Image 1 (cartoon, rainbow, N blue to C red):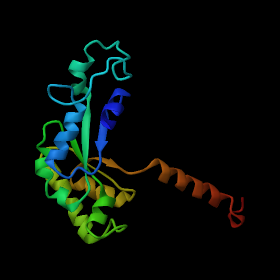
Image 2 (cartoon, rainbow, N blue to C red; image 1 turned 180 degrees about the vertical axis):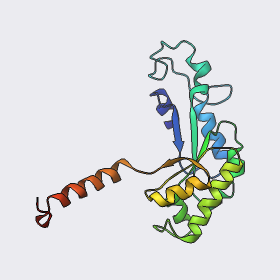
Image 3 (cartoon, rainbow, N blue to C red; image 1 turned 135 degrees about the horizontal axis):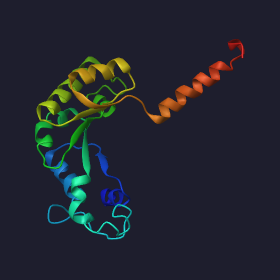
Length: 179
């Protein structure tokens, strides 16, 4: 139901978190597609359909949608090939924080076991012929992931960038900053 709402509002790319199996990936795909290929309910007067002005929206919407599933546990990493094989999965994003936690290393995203699992995941996604993605605020690790094959690598988050800018501004007005 939430997928339908997002799509009806006009979203064209969805990132579905915590996909553990091919069955869960198939369910996400089905939720994005109209019958007979899926279960998405039809509503004619939505933002996505131009409030009814796009006459053939229901027949071509699927062509314009992108589904990215997140793999966030060691178990899911082991199932990447089957998840990637699901028709309609357009890319796979690795959730490094949850992956680390699932491996018993919460808050330790650079633990050697976690890094090795991320590399394994990226290489498996690439081998399956899908785009691989990840989020990291560490530029060196971002480059390392790109070297393994990530093709969409998030290197910043709005709140982190805002906090960094606020710290910089505050530092410029600290009593010992000369400002």
